[in-house]
Length: 269
Image 1 (cartoon, rainbow, N blue to C red):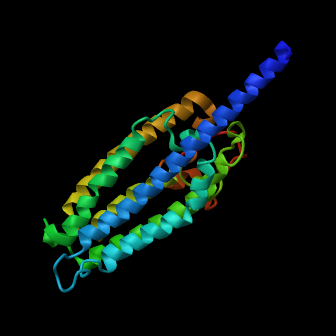
Image 2: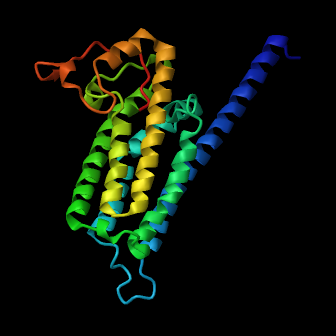
Image 3: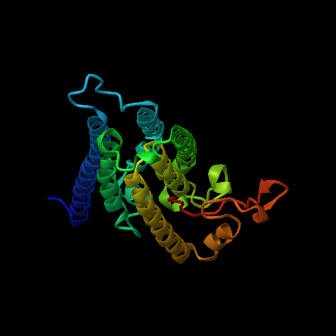
């Protein structure tokens, strides 16, 4: 017969296997949901841009709308390494997404993601405010979006390093975009929404951009409060030498960021 210690070890092993299986199912479901959302978003956008029954069905899939979608797909593909890293465990995913201190962010991503489909409908059919359709402004918007996507790809390369190992051994990022601003990812996302409004010349997109600005500012407030509660003076020291979204010249010396030695600190923005 098995002793009490052997029974306990066997029960622990069964529990570990069960938890690992549950974790894998959760991650597979979360990844599949994210991938499905991306596919459906792209398909819905194309359907809204198509001129049904017209001899030129793709006339509204022009350099601006088509360019915006193409840059979006390139960005998603380029940041797959970041997604692979954060989807390696439930704990890492929740920390990377920030659900521990901001339970509404995923909700707002879904809401705005669905609502933004109407922008493609406006560009393809409704044309609520035609005066916004200025090629020069649209080209500027597309350029801003390209720069935002490149900035996001650069940021995600550094950010992914925070979640590759043990969560308890992470260090503050002082290189790359984090040497200049505390929230380079949110800064790029806000710029991308403004670029969306310019490129697709839609009054609806401008409304959503304002909404996204509010959501991201609220996210930053919650995140910084969380980091200050957990790390106290360590985060205050990092925040003292960097701006939230823009570099602060007065906090730079000799034209270079005032860098400090690495310290343990999770960065999720």
